[in-house]
Length: 248
Image (cartoon, rainbow, N blue to C red; front, side, top):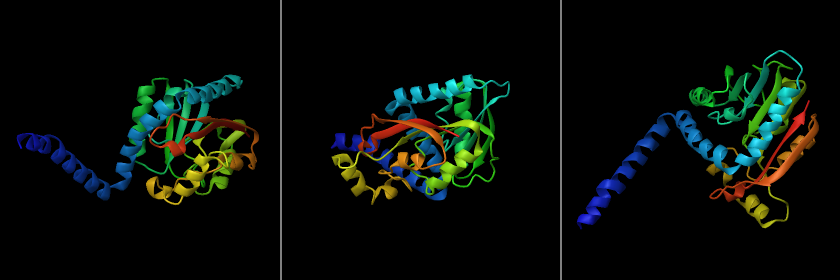
């Protein structure tokens, strides 16, 4: 009996209270709680499941910076920046503009910039969506970066064309996303079935989106991508991934 009381007092009751407080806070300020959850999830996704592929992708970003014969600062727009977990991979001495629909992510972005410690300057944090970047001038960025975001963009065709618009001539779009599995595979069949409920699990996202088709049919030239299997465990439906680049 004493052992049951101990577990109730030390484990069960505190967990119940913590869950009650979190649910209460979530109802009061959903956006703020989502930003907090995003910061936790991003640490796992960006640091564990695709570290090798991310290193390869951002090595291309650094090569692109090195290839530009200019004295101007290298400019990057990151779409769906979240908590800013990509900054540590960015080349040093560059100006970064961040776009995200959740204004509460700005706090985590600033913290990630400080931890990256590679002389990156935050030019602006824009609250908005990739489909309609009214606050972003055309031909203004050397590179656009987007990771684990295109799965949730409603008007993906419009977003891709907007990305192309804001890039300078010769600018590059770098992306890393989870995508649909091969058609006819067992995993693809599961993805198609789960897509009916997936938006309720992860709001507005697509677990079976053939993202490469949107890029292939876009106005970009020299679209290159590589398919790989990420090291997801619990979210095994999101294991099929791709990374690559496209040039304006």
